[in-house]
Length: 348
Image 1 (cartoon, rainbow, N blue to C red):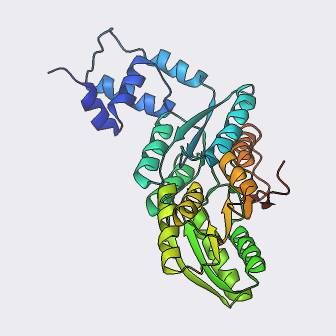
Image 2: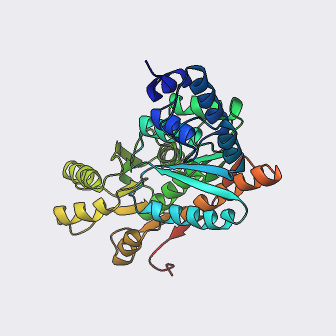
């Protein structure tokens, strides 16, 4: 019986698609993986439809490929990602002229399985470095360390970080400090007293968790008279944000403040319209998006914390490019962006 692509894939421990790319010399693939696949194909006597394999040609093509930086993001449909992606695209255009290709994998959720699949696909495509918005879980943590220790692929995290890895650095907001900043703003507006609701996105997203931790820590230390009525997860969905607020204000009509530490901010306005309240609670949200700017100008929210989304996407790739081309490591483990506080009075 003739050898098959499926048999090669099983022996090589890769997908049939990867085998097909190696055998037919098309698409992006790690040169070492391609060599292993071709060797197995020779050993088991695989014969392609077009004739004899050309390992020399496949090897020459793989060697000629440019340097590649893989990028894995979360919450691809969120408005916040528009600015992140803009930074990634602009960095990609600049780096292309320097012989570096950017390959982006966008995930719509904060899901370990989706992210693992995206990282594995990039690894098989032969990336030389990785920029990732990591899901905070053991599987991703182990995978990042494997890329660094075994594959010698440097990793930079951006927007959200992950502890227990050997990544080069983190690019993004000091999220705990920004949470403390939000608590300080809330304390000033409420005169240090009253009931407050906190809404986060996913508990597997370290950025949101750190913001909440900083907010709660500052309330306890500086505003002990303020009462935290709960911390709830919205999965970054506006419908869920609206539902949480309506439920909370039904139980606590005298709610004084709402802190939304993640996405789904349009649910705030929806909840207020549904409740038809005369006096709304004070509201603090994140991310400078067109909707959030409009909400600020219209008076639906009081403060917006901008985390320089464009800069996060752009700087993560530039740092990795510098490391690949010049061997120059990031200057610091934490490359923090600015905590910019916006009101309707200082929007341009």
